[in-house]
Amino acid sequence: MAKLLDLPEELLSFISEEVDTESLIPLAVSCKIFNRLAGSRYLRLIDYNRRFLHVSNSGPYRLPNQLSFSVLCNVARILGSLSDVLQISVVFLARSASESLQQLKSVVFFLRRIQHDIPSIQFTFDQSRDGTLCPLSSFNAAFENLMRQVHRTRCKSLDIRGSLPLTEGPLNYHLPPNDCVSQLLISDSFLLSQSCRDWFIKFLNSSSAISSVIAQYTDDWAQILPKIQMSSLQRLSFFGPTPGAQGSDIEVVADFSHRHPSLHSVCWGTHWTTLPRRRRRSHPPLSHIVTLKGTVSQLRHFLAFPHVLRNLQQIEVDYERPFGLLPTDSTSANPAQNIKVWDLFALLRDRPTLQKLTFPIIIPEFLINVFSGRRTPLRTKLPQISTLAFSEFQCLSEIEIVEFVRWGQKVFPNARLLDVSFVQWSDAQKSSFAQTVAAEWSSINLLKIDFRLKNVEAWIED
Image (tube, rainbow, N blue to C red; front, side):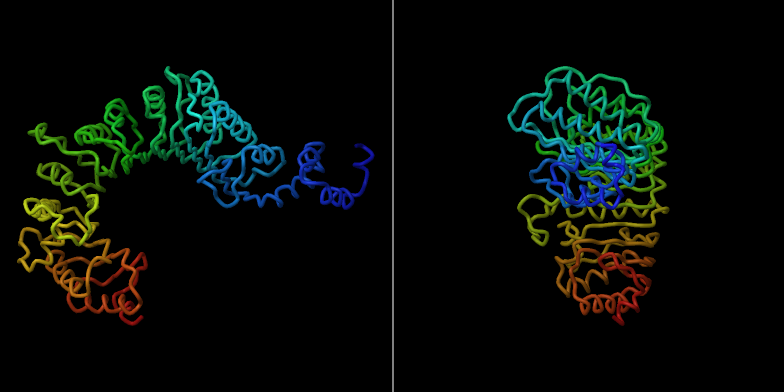
């Protein structure tokens, strides 16, 4: 080897280019110069993305530039190959418990080679295909090593999702206090299971930097939230739900919000439900929350208390379409519930700090009342709103759009910006809509259509 290295680098480079693919990594690990030359060729052959790594063996998660676990280990042996990595996404897709553990070890080996901070890491676990349970004791050690490496890379955004069947027993090991992860995303994760829940709660309670938690709703959160205290938490958002979720009392998440005064933005999702039998006579003020997303029923439940949510600045109304119903199906709305939207608007009128309202136009009772020809109740007017966002405009006809604009001018007389999205309009339709707004809703001077913001006049001229 010594005599070989005495050759000119041009000749060594030629050797690296001519050697067969299977021999590149053995050649690369033989010495530094071949690590650079043969390693560079190997990275070219696999079309290596130096910034964004997607790791999985195969399956439905196949992505461009995806690396298998064996290729990942090869890449980790090439000096300098990991110096520019910013984002890591790993799918643990295994046919057996032993394969899952081996994949965990491969990722640990890879992470140990990284010597700089990684902004974003995502782990997706898929159930073992042969149905065998992964021994908790073995997984405990492997997962501990994995999380220690995540901590060492000072990851800011951590996303853990998917399930992994484990044998009975608690996941139990101690990590250093988490002072790095600031955003945590949990989607249908095995960490919410009975075996891992206590560890997960300890992890959250030891996290001094987490400012945002985004979670897919499961009924497990009703047992987890009362045990969590995170002084740094600013944003909490639920989406989902997972299959089979039944729903939980929304007062659980309200109590959690009350215990976290730094929390200013909350999205309830659709499966935290109001229970009339447990309605409180009084309620914590939740004055620290300024941005809120919830269903009409959820929002009415809390806004009915005059002292609650007095500092709201932004509200987004959430809607879950009933299965099998079309958005324009006027029979889908319960006549007894048609008044709910107007009750909500009446309650919002008593929140003078409110500046922005986001609303899905497909809510059946909303459509029925706006286009029924009924007179708009005076109590539904919201003069404090300056920014409006409406979605699902594709369900409206041209005549209904004109009626909607006239209705909007009555209810939001001081609005300055109108945002409509998911319209799929032609340029001519966009110009026509802008002309209608200019003619019927004079307070609007900025119009955003499908995420493009321009003056109303500019839309007309297009």
